[in-house]
Image (tube, rainbow, N blue to C red):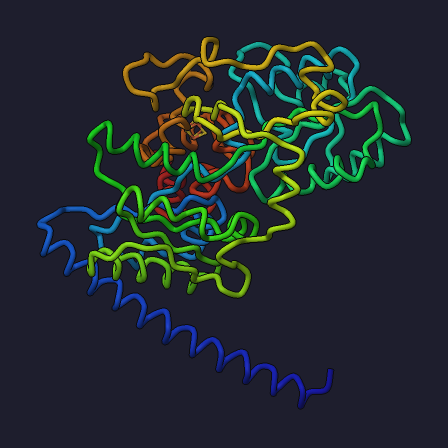
Length: 410
Ligand code: SF4
């Protein structure tokens, strides 16, 4: 690159930076203005907005967006971390199969995910250390290739939301999966969890969630239309947002404007990728291969039509639970956590872990007694500290007050 070209690029970067800064500062002023008007008019102490998605929580925390907000505007993380919400039962199933000689494929994110058992091994990482055949892969297709060449009895630990499910569905539909590879599907659907979380707040008389920053990536698949139940059934605004700091600021401003005007609807801020109807091809793929089932979310409970289970011929040929004769988890056996009111909490989570409340926005990571004391990104105790999308991991790495607390040894 010539010095002249470099100089031009630097000028351009500086120009864009200045413009973004001006826009961010103007959005910040708008947010304060709207929030103050709402607070005054409604005579309330706190306005609570939830971001569903772990990547939004990352952007909010990493870029210090909370520090720009009025003190009476609470931005809380939601259940949008696919690793955090995998019930301990399925971790135990995968660990047991690995111990029995089945090759287990997993994404790196779920490799360290612990079940709730105190014994050893209680994660796929520990199962591998014990000699279990566990392979970390980047994609489902990597597992397909490896299983095709090895011919070994194998299972894929299939976590994910609507963004990941099409990759499973496509491979299954195109019949590129060898007979020896099964899918342990713990894929989950996001709108039912959002609905459940809002209703949980309402039923328990908690400070209500007033608006939702809806997930950008998921909405590229399902479409913004899937969030229409928020304004229509729950009178709540939602903005499908991108993941840059300006996207998040824009979404907050739009939500507050809709609250202020009393006109809730679904807006698409992330227009560069999201359409109202989503990706029809990907949605059809999911429908063809999976059925929606009553499914468990770790720390939350069972949510109707929120899980994806293989159906028809795909179930018969490739369902891991069916093939290995393992019963699926049912509400009767599922041990609820304290996020589920009225039912005493037991151990779907490790002792003292408050991840069940963190994922539904009832508690903050810093409310947990284990946060950075026995539970850290290097040595996760609970599921919200495992993945880069987990609220506890994000707060441990980027939330300034949490870092200060660690430095002070508090
Ligand atoms: Fe669970 Fe660890 Fe988060 Fe506490 S800090 S809620 S133990 S994941």
